[in-house]
Image 1 (cartoon, one colour):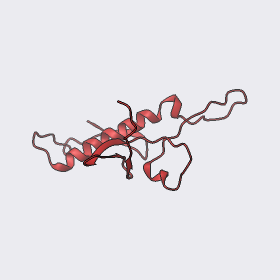
Image 2: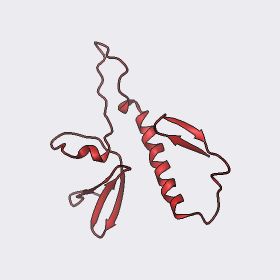
Image 3: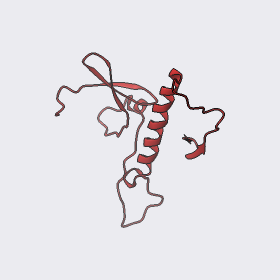
Image 4: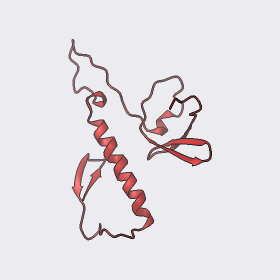
Length: 114
């Protein structure tokens, strides 16, 4: 099993003694599973051409790129276009939230099409 280090942007092989797999795991294991999955998806999306920042600017090739913003980056950013990645969850009845590793934002889905 490999784990992703977001600071160094590399994968490390997990230590076999610390990551013993069992059928009846602890509650924290489920949280770790979703955190690792989220970080893996975030890393893969970050490598996509659309989200890569150009290394240097060529005169004729100015391509646009999108930057993923954590949910805490939405505070005070009214009227700006931001791209976020998160998990859609329903924490309360008839209320939906978008959450990532930094925070939770309530979203309005009344005008959403199915």
